[in-house]
Image (cartoon, rainbow, N blue to C red; front, side):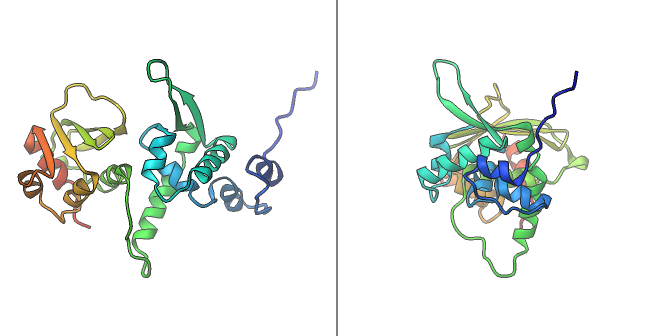
Length: 233
């Protein structure tokens, strides 16, 4: 009995999945861009890198993205297997979007784009950023501290988004949104732009706390170490 043959993905059937738009090139780069190259697509993926999001959360994180375009990008990315939908059990019973295992393999692409974009000679880094961008920056630029290691768990609340951050023996471990860390060593609460200014060393942690712009409870020294582990850039 002849075994069934699994059909290969081609530019044509990828085009069918994403509305007939395709480069039609027999090149892996063109093939990848057929799936994630539409405007806003990679930024939707960026906002799912730290965990699932609801549609409303994606709208809030990407205010320049209109609802119809967001809905289309979600459909396109789901159709080609980059993300999937999931309905949370009651009492939440809301629909969320999350990266598939294959979609999460885009992580090195983001790392390369970040490095390349920061070296741009012509385009300034201006405009808004989301809370996820702040935590992704922490993850990207954290420098391990093997000679002055510490272990701590952090709960960081930035508006509607809550994150869990773990440092183990001076190495950054978990950085995830929406995960309750249980009892944490340190709690940080405030505006994400204020936290970004502290992590980028434009503002001192002490002044942000003294002025009431950030609230820190628990192990203040652990928070200082976390900030110091991200060098100025």
